[in-house]
Image (cartoon, rainbow, N blue to C red; front, side, top):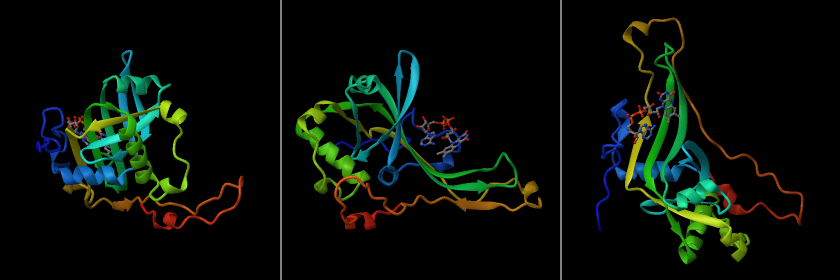
Length: 217
Ligand SMILES: Cc1cc2nc3c(=O)[nH]c(=O)nc-3n(C[C@H](O)[C@H](O)[C@H](O)COP(=O)(O)OP(=O)(O)OC[C@H]3O[C@@H](n4cnc5c(N)ncnc54)[C@H](O)[C@@H]3O)c2cc1C
């Protein structure tokens, strides 16, 4: 098995700004990708950069996502247009004693490369994986995609060959001269939570499925 480069180990992915926040093990890359639900996918079309939010899943050493065959951006990605895929997890606000040092706690992953188009059984499996990542336990309860729906869907994979991870944590990095300023300083954590399920009133009423109770952020 070929060894994939460590995050941040290529010229394009080496973290230069605040390099102490770079994390270079692949386990951390996988953890950030597994913890996120939404990624942002860049593509340049006719000289104009676009950034598209997408749901996704990690499948080993690649990420997978899907889009419409009607989308020019997804068609460009399917044709091999270079992309930059990012996942950002916001963990807190850092309230420093100066505006300059005020910042955020975050975990971020960035992947560079080109996508490949998945087809047939590989595309079917990928769609299930995306559902399992976003909605664990749901797939077996719902109608699977029809042939027509599959024909309208592009399923893409992006290898995790060239990636970087940057994690920001810890207390405010205030200048020693600012420490005695008469102002509170510290970190306000941010947590994502699922709310109470709201039933769709159309169709027959059903109990809320048990697997939702296990969903946590
Ligand atoms: C929630 C959040 C808020 C932020 N707010 C700001 C802000 O307001 N102003 C600001 O200047 N910066 C902010 N950052 C940091 C920003 O993402 C960049 O890291 C920073 O601007 C340096 O970019 P650069 O291209 O000059 O860095 P460089 O170090 O030159 O980038 C080199 C390589 O490092 C990797 N890299 C850079 N940043 C990241 C990242 N965030 N995640 C993963 N890999 C990365 C990429 O592979 C990149 O090609 C924020 C980050 C997050 C996650």
